[in-house]
Image 1 (cartoon, helix red, strand yellow):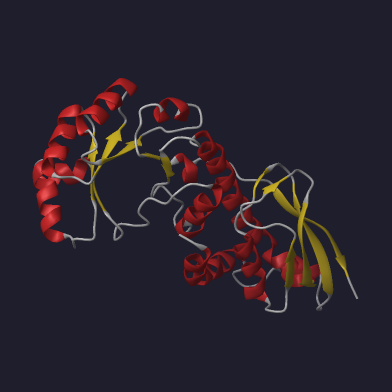
Image 2: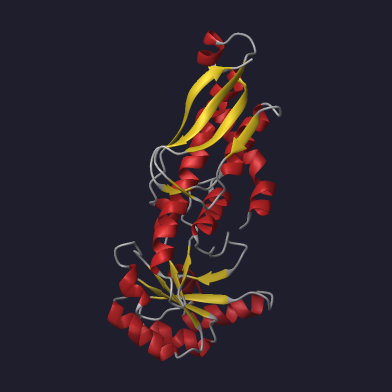
Length: 284
């Protein structure tokens, strides 16, 4: 997921968010600002973190009024500090007021994800293990949230169900066994698709290896069981650790020597980064 891909998929989602917030009019703004008036407002960070989503923030206002001018003093991926002015907006005060909440919702959410991702990614430095996100994203926010993970230093797992084969417990149950599920996936899928199998115990690990899985996900295993699973796999497949991965236990997981650690917490449990628009005033 990159900025270009996000841009191609973002406008209709941003418009939906604006339509959710403005069904007919911004009655408060129209009450106090009945006529056009040029104004200026500052974008202020209220806590330390990693910024992500500046282009989305800007696009909210441009969709409301293409003449809104946004100047940023930072870039996505930058570390920002409490009290730092991150940018300045100039435009019709009615637009600045009406777009404020939607724009900040995106920027705060994406920056929060980038901040939390950076914290965990930094813990993996020096190891071979890469940090992955999951599909545990907010509905209609995936394109933004997965982009934020990349900004924070993580990598994207499959984007959606069309993007890769991941045989989980219920798929295996439907097929009848790990072996059958892998065989059926190989027969159905184009050769460019890797096949990943979710394994919950060592017997499933052995079966997945023998069936020719490309990636084996070690799901909710103890450290001892994961270490044994990695030994059994012996480099015949890539390995991924998943299940309750948090900032508190990632150090222990890295020691197992898996190729990937995937964490749903990156997108479903990251707190927002507190950012505000302040000091709005008219300008000539």
